[in-house]
Image (tube, rainbow, N blue to C red):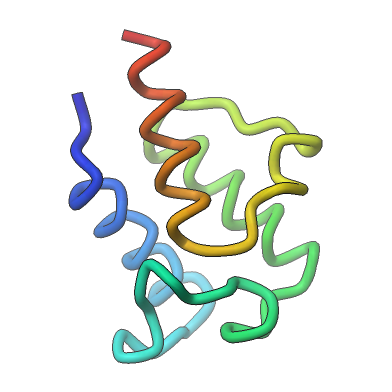
Length: 84
């Protein structure tokens, strides 16, 4: 089972590699849209990348409630525990 730290690390890695976000700008409380200035297409790209790398499926309607990195972590952890 993945831990919150492992999931956070993966999200952080994706944000840095795919979206060129500075490591210092990433924390659990950061809002993906207002703080990191991602748009809806960026959010879809983020979820598709996480889908592939973590082996989970995130539906578009589930993404609508995710605003912070904490929200994404919580969703991924819940999805991973359900799949196991």
